[in-house]
Length: 345
Image (cartoon, rainbow, N blue to C red; front, side, top):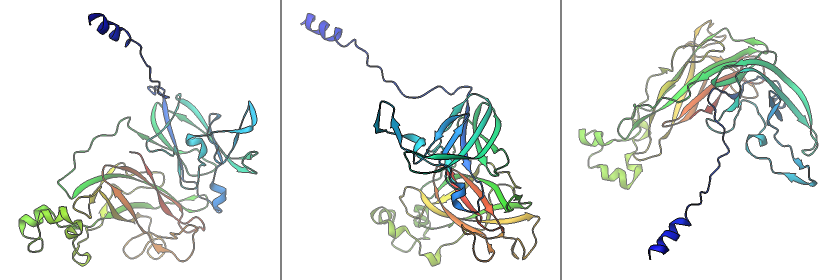
């Protein structure tokens, strides 16, 4: 018996090494690309190939041939299959960055034409910028200028703002990238504001305090989420709340807390939050803002129709960190202005 056990342990000494396809990033410049380039024709702003320091990170819609057997295609995976499209970003994955050595980075964007197995690429954008170590987003906003750089911490702080049942939070960072027209950055300072439903559901506290309908109990919420819903006509909306400071062109608000008021007693924590933009400097009533100082803009893409008071809404998710890029031409034809959202966490 002793011999059998010893032999068993002896046979288990082999080590199976698991190899992850990852590289250490300490001291590296970690990069994301955000496409906020305005356009006249949407096709002018779709890039089939993207190179960073001659390293191809995107070659969407290209079929690569196996060099050992030209009759076979190579399976392209990851970001390489994605084009850099209008008001979109690379990497396509949440919180992912490309690693480079600090120093000069040259960005090249190409448009593609022809069949997928024999594409022709035309260089449309080439700019260089000096990178520092750490995370940085490169915001493309003008074909003739280098990108705007936004830096992020290596690790996002953990929030402690959760409260029982109904009230959790999301973080939003707003960027003013609006042009008045082609080549004319806005001179307006913009205040991003949000509004949420204060009491979308009856809570356990409402039951305890007698504010909920007579006879309604917490067990009712658990058995039927619809019973927790306050009728729309009785729901109250918050006042418009400033999301950070007002910002000029190329500036951002920094990370700001947005409350997420759930619309079901037990839910995954995704709700609607409304937004608007107020002009705080440079505004002219009737020209670029209305009587309430709300920004007047062409808010469709492509831009059509009259100037309209800007408003929009986004789904807020508890615990998420989102960029809100506000870009386009306010009154200069296509594209109209709007927010593009990108998740950081």
